Length: 128
Image 1 (cartoon, rainbow, N blue to C red):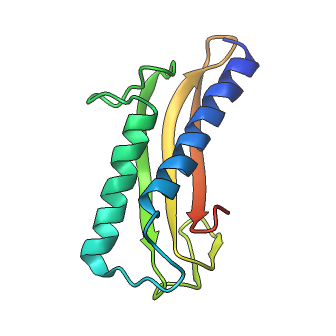
Image 2: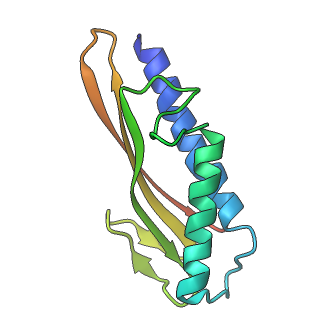
């Protein structure tokens, strides 16, 4: 597998994170307070959309990517209007309601060597 394919797969995961976060945050405004059950609903919606967008099966593998390890959501935090401003666990300042997510998996590089991949994204209601 060459580096172009690796970058394409990495980008597909990044795009799936963004699209899934925007779908999960669809009804959240700058002033929305979600409380725990609402935050969990947003987190659950993100997870469902993310798995659907990447066609991830029950074992964690995508039907459209060639990962050598399952795609795993390592961190998922929902921030509402009452939480911001805040700093995510990776150090990024969160200014608006958002979803913080860290996803991990593994690809083989062009030499067949496994490469761990960690993707961090903070997507707010304004798509930043």
